[in-house]
Length: 384
Image (cartoon, rainbow, N blue to C red; front, side):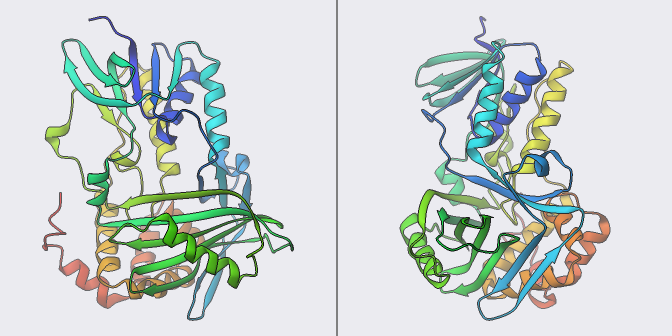
């Protein structure tokens, strides 16, 4: 069977580009092809998260903050800081451009834009993939495409957000990141704002909803207009917009869907933390382990399964959030106030120590979370 590639990567989003760029920089042997349905990359999203001081991402981020703030509409804010941690902002176009430059410098790695990948089938000696440009054959496949709409709709909850990067007339304080601002609960679920001052005159402002149903861009845009008006930023000029729907508790794929020679990565493989939607660092960790395996002439690795304790905690959190969304503002403020900032940053970055986990558990409102734990034998709790 003649092969078009040793490794075919389906999807050139964050996961696909992260592994392809690493392979290109490392000069790992073999022919690599990345298939991406977008015709070009745009500045359409961003990633923000906690990372230790001196880390690669803290050093390369476009903006960093020593302090972060949680606040509820009904009153009460908590400002936190941890000397060895920073909250950082990374622009998507910066990542896209760096990855494309690395790929272009290695003739054995090719990025193909404007092509849609379809079904993957096992054939003698390899895999065959249907694409809008014809059939491709490869020894191994990494499927890093986003989840299909039906699977996305089966998530326990959806995180819908809409944001604008704006330029404002009067300078603002750029020293504090509002990671969860104006938290409240209404008839549609839990909602909060996200305000990152990238400079004294530039900010990324978003409205985010955690709910069982999808919230479209127009409705979220109206809420964002209200938020900007309340902050006196109605006359701000818009630099760009971003909108997405992230799964929280995405249904797991059944074993019968596994295809020998193909592994999954990215959001569809569970790269996003179910309870928060954070995924950037998890994807980078997977990409590093995967390229190391390939360098040892081993098959590529799929995104690893969630550790049992973390999965259990996330399921309890999501169940409580779905049944008692009105408690979420209090819950997040309690976390910010009662858990040491470094411990909370580690917990949200998948780097928690056992003591960090205990501190988070101790900060939870006991009644609803205890009921959620006791309901682990419910239909939701029995999900694989």
